[in-house]
Amino acid sequence: MSDGLNLTPAQKQMFLLAASKKLGISPNVLKEKLENGEIKSTLEKSGQFQSINKLMNDKGALERLLASEQVKELIKRMKEGK
Figure 1 (spheres, helix red, strand yellow):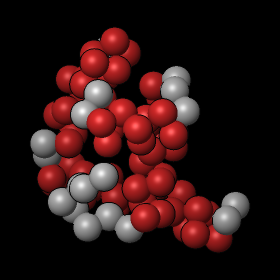
Figure 2: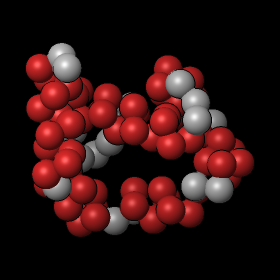
Figure 3: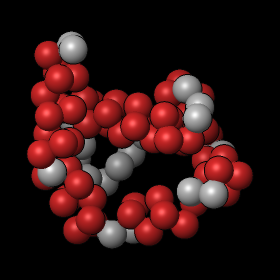
Figure 4: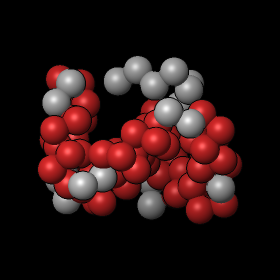
């Protein structure tokens, strides 16, 4: 999974977990769909495609998301294994 944002493995995992919860699919299935290029149809079915596509195309929005206290706390917990 190439992100172009130099995300750490913990950050990538955090996004997978959050997105899979929102989409109602397992993180492993989501990762497979991302790697196989099947994610668009999954997102379209969930009604989330436009929102996620907009976020993914806005580097500033992604950077603000990563800089948020909630995301920092999630990353910290993930690194600590909690």
